[in-house]
Length: 166
Image (cartoon, rainbow, N blue to C red; front, side, top):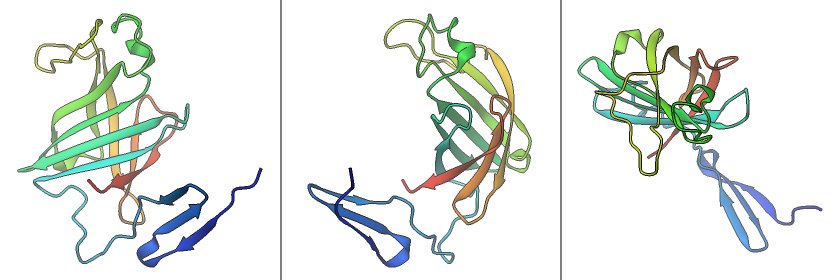
């Protein structure tokens, strides 16, 4: 079956797909170099997303840097090491987190894998709950602007993550 409709290439790299009963816009626009923030600017929350090579699931990475230190949090749909500790929860069962990564260490740092406790409405208390595992991670600038290379122990290979404008 063929899709019916048109693809329109608009200014600034935006692609618009039109057809019967739908209109689609891509969410990735070319960066304006004069307004681009440094990779990890102070007081800027950055949000990246990309696909995991092992299973095609989404990986989300959020950073917030201030006064030389960054908070890094990342999650994906499945953490096999959290199946037991989360009471058999198969999906959205954990996150990796570090609240104090020195900005100059973002190319080589550690994240704690925290599993969601069993039961409905459970939350992770990073101050009292111990991580199940420590994961080595690295973040490197990618090319073009707006892409980073993110690698963690639980991945087969580093992956490209794309900045989401929030």
